[in-house]
Image 1 (cartoon, rainbow, N blue to C red):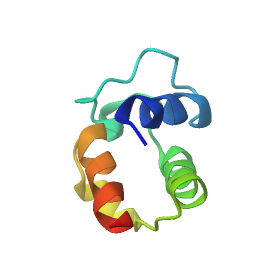
Image 2 (image 1 turned 180 degrees about the vertical axis):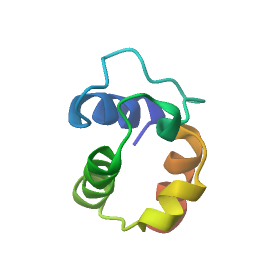
Image 3 (image 1 turned 90 degrees about the vertical axis):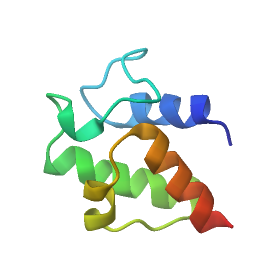
Length: 77
């Protein structure tokens, strides 16, 4: 898994996020489209695509796309 593929998955699966708009340092919760539904979609994406569970609280505490990606890698071992 690469961070580029992870970003592609975010852009494809979170409604309202345009292709090419997410970067490694993007803070998802600062995006205008980020709401509770987008957060649930992100949690479902992480679970289904990467077989990792991140809680809503964890996701809120992770600041950037890179930090979310690194948390997924750490949980995968």
